Image (cartoon, rainbow, N blue to C red; front, side, top):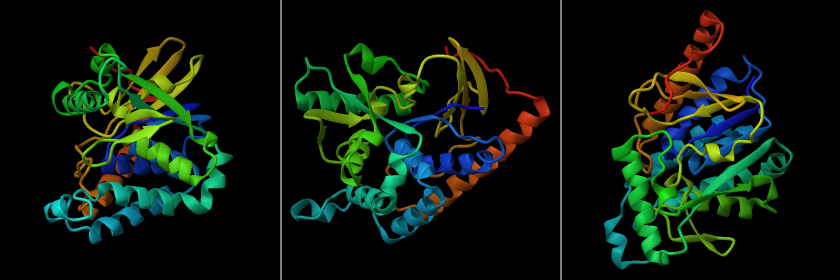
Length: 292
């Protein structure tokens, strides 16, 4: 039914996507040829492809239980990181993907979005402005597809996970797609500064192949003025957006909330079941409003 699926970013909120996928995948024979993701959404897409999505909910729930704080201020004068998220995230990617990376290489195509700052901005300023755009998109603008970053010259590059030679390269790709200082260090990819793909668009639809087909777009937070799901034509395609029915009870960089991870996953499963029920009741999809 859907030949492409897009995974928005959102840190721990992305476990909603796991629950939703698990509730609908077998029922509608969801076997897309292309998956496109950004930041943690790209990692979730990869975990689905290697059959480790449910395992990852248990894994990160356990890890978050062991992590007491999101900021360790006492480490300002020491060698340990002040923000533990990067090392936890990095270790999780390695542990979950290492022994199944060959499965990812032979699976459906996974495209990962990475943002690039404009060449006219100095590196440090490009990073600061990118961060400001990222947080304004998240907390102030509330748009599905903000154009602010593109107007300033930021771009979004897409990399195929299957082109990674080993799990180390894949790890660097996901971390580059998630690069959000100070929670992560400054990172580069292919010799150029990398920023969280969500700086340009946290719903990376630029990675979609053109041509006829249906696209499923899995969001990770509530957008005001939009129903829980809606379908709109886009050229020769139909794009179906689905968002959580309630705000997920975890924030992007909160790595101390195991209950939030599990609860967000459960909301995804519930929303997936409701999505299926309405598909059957309406014999199709609700066609919602165009983005203003």
